[in-house]
Image (cartoon, rainbow, N blue to C red; front, side):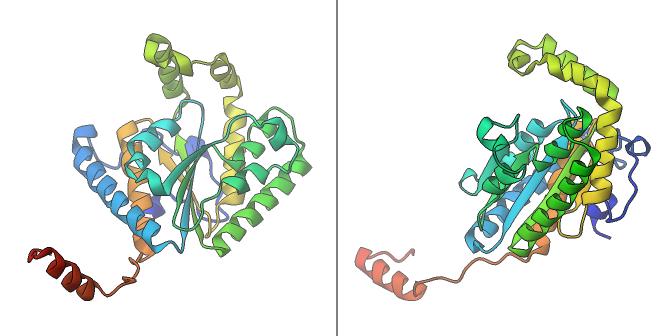
Length: 279
């Protein structure tokens, strides 16, 4: 059985986040136990991303969603940061700009999707438009349903055109969120990240959970699966995300392109010209 299946939301599921342990760590004891595995998958991820970039026939879109302080930035830094920036890009989705608000809600997401050979990480994503907008009553139930359908069609379109999609929800507890937010207050190097809104949004914790559950139940598909990652332990989050991405890229059987020149002829020509026998 594939490792990823344990965390994957199967189409048609009925997810209840309260039943999923955010402290889960699959028998590993601590970060020290996990570090060799984390490094192994990080190195493997770098190699596979190189092959994806060289092959330049397919692409990978990774969506990260979480409650505030859920670890999106840390996941990008500690896991996906191992990839070569030449073929990897991060796109953050913040409050829509006036230009973005003047278009349909998927416009800004479609502009940011990966080109062939590229990996793009969405820090938050197009799902914000069925999260914040729903929780704060900016859209009604009918509009929300239309957006679920539009998202499914959007992701199917990307998949049909060679973009592989992996969507990760970093699952933390409400107590863990508060600990992380308080830690920001105690660390001058993190003061720039402090926002009163993060604390105020805690009042809507249950509403956000219900909104996420509906997203998982409605929008996890074969082409664009959701994975719910226990994320109270940052080291375990890093291990699971990297292993799932590696597992998926390995399944693609990525091939380096054939040489476009006669290698032996080039070797003879330039080796002889340089009077070098080591080429």
